[in-house]
Image (tube, rainbow, N blue to C red; front, side, top):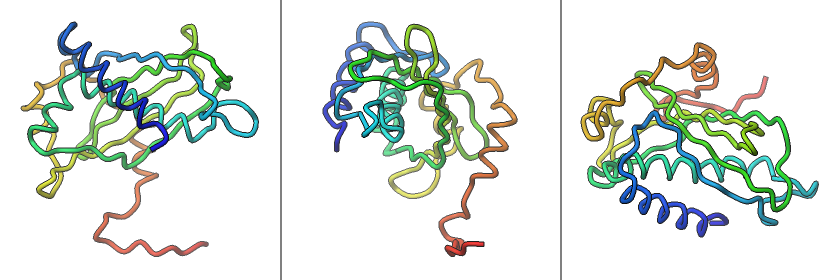
Length: 186
């Protein structure tokens, strides 16, 4: 709820840009400009580490809207869920600092799509996140990539995901929802 107004503003702007500039290819880089607000800060007076992921969600909304994926998802009753994410920090974002969130689809495997988000200041990466997302149907079940790509057009030029991303996805995965997953510490 704490970034709801930013989310609504980003979605509105993305729809305007989609009407003015046309649809982007899913592999294109989307950029939105944000400012580090006082509500984004932690006790050390820089951007809270957890806030980056919330603000990267805004970049994902922009990407989904401007590529036409959001409309296809709404029409067909599909939605995406984040199943894993990893973030690496280089520099802190300070109060009132302007930065860009850059977002791009970086690939897919047999179960998920992968996105990259970056917090960038004057062309310099301050933080980077890799997101693994599953596409689901409101009617139940997982959305196949064939169905998704048929609705939005098969994206050209999506590279294979880097091996470290595939390794990360495999090593960070939890058991499926219908399998047992006891909390046992070793």
